[in-house]
Image (cartoon, rainbow, N blue to C red):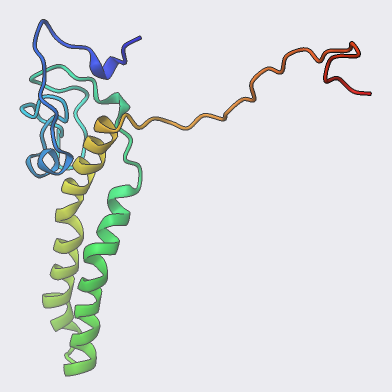
Length: 149
C-alpha cells in the first residue's frame, strides 16, 4: 500500500532531497521546487509544483525549542553582559538588546520549521501508536502440550 506522500504525479520520479537544503530554500521536501510556506511561518496546504499534500507536517513546538537553544540564550546573554559590564540606562537596552533578541529569535524560526517538516517527510514520521500484544495460540491441554499442570 502506498502512502499519500509517495504518490507520483504522472511518470515523474523525484530525487531525494536533503532536509537542510530544503529548509534553507523553504522548498517542498519531495520535489525541491515548490514553496513550503504560504506566509512567513504558515505551511502551505500543498506544493504548488508537484502537488504534495502537506497535511502530514506537524512540527508543533520543535522550531521554538531549537531557536531557544541556539539563539535565544546567546541573545539574552548579550543583554546580561551589557548590563553587568556597562550598567547602561534602560533606553539603551531598548535600542540594543531588544532588537538583538527579537531578530535572533524570529528569523531562524522559518528555517527550523522547514527543516522539521522536511525531516518528517524524509523519515516518514507519523503519530505514535500503542503496540498491541500478538494473539496467543490456544494453550494445549493434552499431556504432551505445554499447558498448565
